[in-house]
Amino acid sequence: MSGGYKVFVTRMLPEPAIEKLRNAPEVAEVRINPHDRVITREELIEGVRWCDALLCLLTDTVDAEVMDANPNLKVIANYAVGFNNIDVAEATKRKIPVTNTPGVLTETTADLAWALMMAVARRLNEAERFLRSGKWNGWGPMQFLGADVWGKVLGIVGFGRIGKAVARRAWGFDMRVIYYDYVRSDEEIERALRATYVPFDELLQVADFVSIHVPLIMHGPNKTYHMFGDREFDLMKPTAFLINTSRGPVVDEKALVRALKDGKIAGAGLDVYENEPSVEPELLEMENVVLLPHIGSATNETRTRMALIAVENLLAALRGERPPNVVNPEIYSAEAD
Ligand code: DGY
Image 1 (cartoon, rainbow, N blue to C red):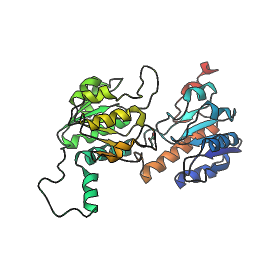
Image 2: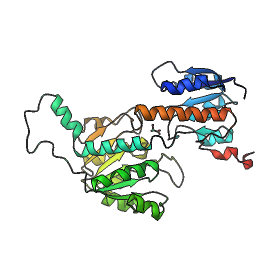
Image 3: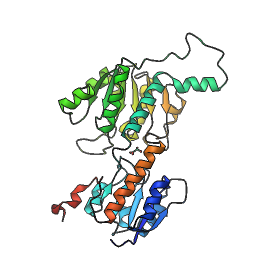
C-alpha cells in the first residue's frame, strides 16, 4: 500500500466518514467540495483530474468525459444504492470499480414509502397546512376525509430489498400484498412475506396503493425508464395512489400530471422527480399530491452508515482489493483482461 492516494469527495458527508477517510493509511489527502451545493461539471472534471479516488453522489453525472479526465482513476464510490448517475459500462471498459451502498438504507427508505402512503391517503400535509394557516375553527364531521390504508391492497413494483421491507410493514395494517418484478421470488420468500406475485397489469388494476421500488434502467429488456405512463395510469383504479421513492424517471411525470388532473388516480406521494431538482409545476398546485425533496434515506443513522460504507468501498479499492459493494465485479474476473 502506498499510502499516498488523493481522494475527492463531491460534497460534505457525515463527519465520521470524513474522519475515517482522513485517518486511513491509504489516503494522503482528502479534498471536499467546499460549497453546500451540487458540484458543477467543470468542478467535477477538475476534481477527477486531481484525485486517485472519487467519492460521488447521485447528483453527479460521471460519464465517459469525466472519466477521460483521469486515465488512472482507481475507484468511483457512489454515496447511494442507485448508481444510474454513473456510466458503469464506461467504467468497466476502463477497469474502474464502481461501488454503491446497498442494504443500509433499506428500512429507512421503506419507512418513507409508508410515510408517503399515510400522508397522501389521510391528507396529512393538506390538513396541517389548513391548521397552520389559522383556518381551523374546530372539529368537523366532514373535514379532511381521506382513504383508509389498513385492509387495502398494496401493490409493490420491484421486489428487491426495499420492496420487501415495504411488504413486511403491511402486516400490521392487515393489507393484502401483491407484487410484480421481472424476476419472481422463491415461493418460500413469498410465503414468509405474505406477498403474491401478479403480472404488472393485474397489479395496476387491483392495487389501492402502488409503490415503486425498481432501479432506473434506461435501456434494454429490463428497462424501467417511463415504466409508468398514460397506459399504466389508465389501468389503475381512480381511487388508487401512486407512491414513488425509487427514481423519478421511472414515472413519466407529464403523464402523471394528466392522470391526476383527469381523476385517473386519486393521488400521489413522491420523493423523486424526473428532472430533479425541478418538479412539474402543476404538481406543486395539487392538494392530492405529497411532495418530498428526495429524502428517502435521510436519517442521521442511515446517512452516516451510507457514508461509512462508501468510504470502506473506496479504501478497499485503493488497497487493490475487491470492494464489498462493487457493481461491476466482472472487472475482477480473469476474462476481463
Ligand atoms: C439512493 O441511495 O439511491 C437514494 O436515492 C438516496 O439515498
